[in-house]
Length: 353
Image 1 (cartoon, one colour):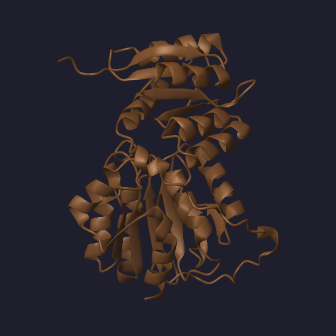
Image 2 (cartoon, rainbow, N blue to C red; image 1 turned 90 degrees about the vertical axis):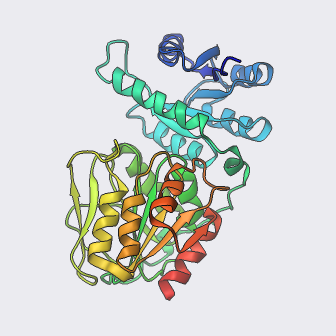
Image 3 (spheres, rainbow, N blue to C red; image 1 turned 180 degrees about the vertical axis):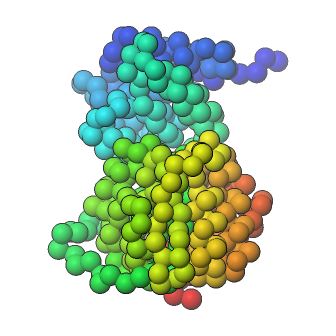
């Protein structure tokens, strides 16, 4: 019996972009484009009638935009959805993050033209996203995220600056923004540790991610800057394109950014961060590996646990992609396996121990 070729519905308001994306998807026969839609309303009709395995969904469209279409797809007929975002659009970045929180498996920045120098890169990113879609755990999306209680950050005084003597490192990739939205906004302003996050994302999106989490969270969330002190009760997001590491002992740590070669095909990668946390904070370190493709974070978590720190892994049921947690569990083991919705409380418990 012939192996099933996953079918894809391409949705974009540009006829040229529909053609270009379709050609890239069908390049080697791994995936088959079953149809193309010009807006969200057409997309919903085609999802209902054709039942594609995967949908690629433009964000900014007339009549019904990608975010609205995504919400209806995930409510009525859940399936892997990959968002396509125009590069350089702040609105597109914000909507992309909201889409990832609402269950989109991944996103790809659209090529800027037919002879664009980034076409090869976009094609590689698109195939990585399509392969992630094939491995997606839809049950993890069907689990509703907890509502985030609005926080008036402007009227919430930031805790006094104090050098961190405990640190929590978090690794996340595909499905990460949704999981982080389950964790960071549910932490109180005072945790007793600095939290350092590596989310596999391009630079513009990590900045938007940090800003969005900051708006939703009692804790202060910022994109990390080279040389800044590691303060307690702060969340630092590694900027896209830079590895983030930690230098100095507990109580005097500083952040370091560098552009050394990508690890596991990504920069930032979690392994360098986790290794530096293990070296500098030892038993005062906690490593957390969330949903994602690949094995980034596994070796770093092993080093954290070997140094006396604690290791936490997201469970299979709530992971959009179980690759990174599974690899970390196999190599490093874990002190705790947890649903994303329970991790905020677990972090508080571990930091108080």
